[in-house]
Image (cartoon, rainbow, N blue to C red; front, side, top):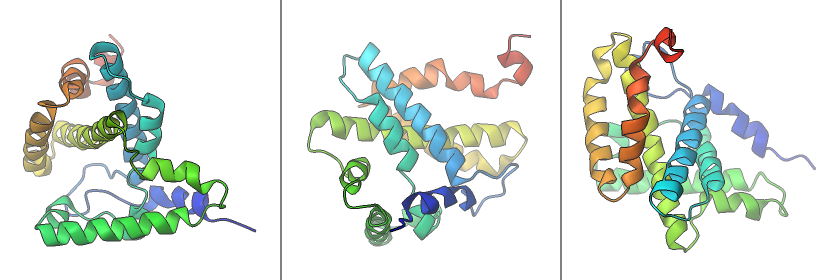
Length: 199
């Protein structure tokens, strides 16, 4: 029997983000998911090394890779629409959950439990904290996109950048890893290639 899970997942590259905004460079879901995975891993490493946490950074990276995979089915709903009110937000979460179940059903029965762990939180404090860092990584990736657009002269992302900055500020009160990442790594996103290579 043939299973469709990975063939379906591979279609993330066809889902474009930021649909309502003018982009200087289009960003697809595959690119975003890779960046979220790397940042989520980094946030967990920061948590473990600097803040005495015991987080599974490798699992966080995998969760980051799959965190938006339901959008293959639902599409990327713009944030202002998704969070317009509680009713829409709740309905979208339900649609998202149905889409995730549909994806997981495209796996063989013996493999499915391992992948379900990436979509469903375990009832431990460390797992809940790690998943909050994955959400923070998602926001940081969006913030980086805003910086890149701003640096290319596109003013379309100004209000999105400010909104994400405020959200990260409120999240960082309980997640100090965000502050560390922003202090240590975000300033480099404004540099040219020559500046990054030390020329």
